[in-house]
Image 1 (cartoon, rainbow, N blue to C red):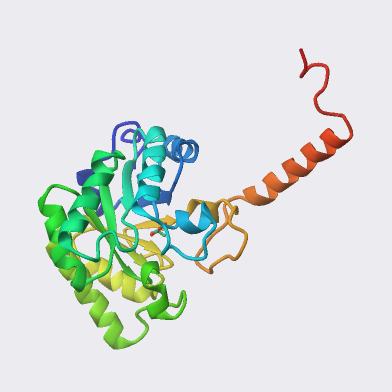
Image 2: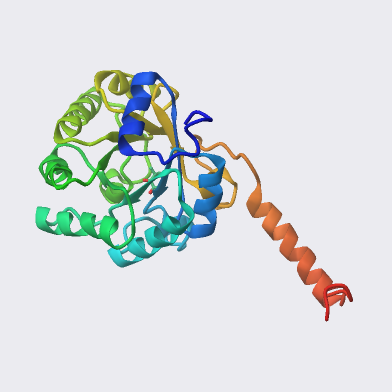
Length: 271
Ligand code: KIV
């Protein structure tokens, strides 16, 4: 968001208008108040409480195990730090797939109990009627296509999606169907840059890419990846903007050494 707009509250219409004006959308993830506040002060357009928190925050192997109550807690916590960015919450696995009624109830909980301003839902055409129902009761929905991590077992791993013509065509159709259903934006994850560019120019709503090249209308990364805090592996599409994990380890080692050698606390740090 431009400097003058940075200090006013960013809304869903602001995000959709950014596509028309050609301004790229910046989005990162947060799961707690302290991190959310740092991202907000930095000027992010959208802060996503992603179900990636299951992995980079709670330490699970994938995103499937995180519950509604855990996502509500993360979202409520992030809400405390967010004053300018648009705050979107990820609907966790099985919170929206079982029935439209359950999806409406759970989407509503994010707004009512946690202060989110919209929800993100994975999936294409099969999810469209549920998404439309959520949108129809006034809840903004962000779509998510490509490598949708809640389908990780069906994909057989974190593989590049949309490489076959038939899959690429289906994804393009899914994007148009989601637009029709009323989503205000779509995350495109781990798909060829050429396909993401084509999808982005075929819909009037913004696309936000992660591993989808520079042709998207915005970009998202998991904050712990960007900061170099998640050290288990580094996907090709991640750029480390810092090595915070190494810095924390170094600081902790220095602390241990100071405690063991009685260099901490000093007289100045004592009463
Ligand atoms: O859960 C998440 O953090 C996400 C983003 C990677 C888009 O879905």
